[in-house]
Length: 247
Image (cartoon, rainbow, N blue to C red):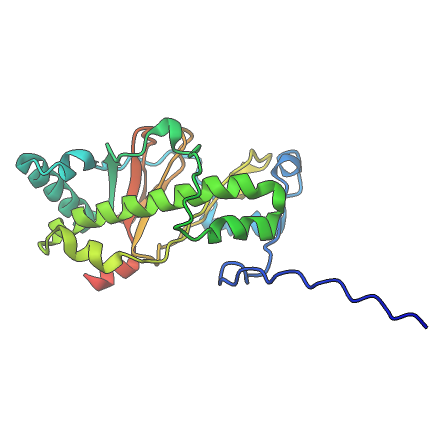
């Protein structure tokens, strides 16, 4: 009896990461849901949290010139520090302009593999969505790294506003863990029954939001909701619960 052929080699183990080990989330096809009259129950909010028909008043959020602050100009540093201090004590929100991320390239970073960084974000997208999403994963990876660098520059500004100097918080948060999220809110035939994201608190230290021109971001201050109007040249920044407790 001839010997049996050897078994095929086992595939190499996939990279191990907390991101890669998460169960696959449910997927909803927005192109189909926007024509659907019956909204999935996951998207229907309680009556007391449903959107109001009345437009809330706008929140006055100061624009902070981050580029001028980082230049070291004394007047710019003093102005930015004062504005951030006032905003964080009042409601925790401010805008960052001249942040160093060109808008044309913000969502279209070119990927250059220098072998010096982990591609865990790219591999996570490939593992959950398939090989067709590898290029998107590379762009996502680059954008995540750029936003992480921006967060450290903002930490310099927050450190100055707290009186501990520009390097104290930056050094503390270097090597931090971040969450990158893309929110897509398709048109809805029953918009009065749902919200993109409901009322919540941010449990993290810092949130950086890239708004589109549609708007919808609201902040609850002094027992009333206020809108933060879109600014195409700015990121919306807010401090979270962890930062408030830490400081």
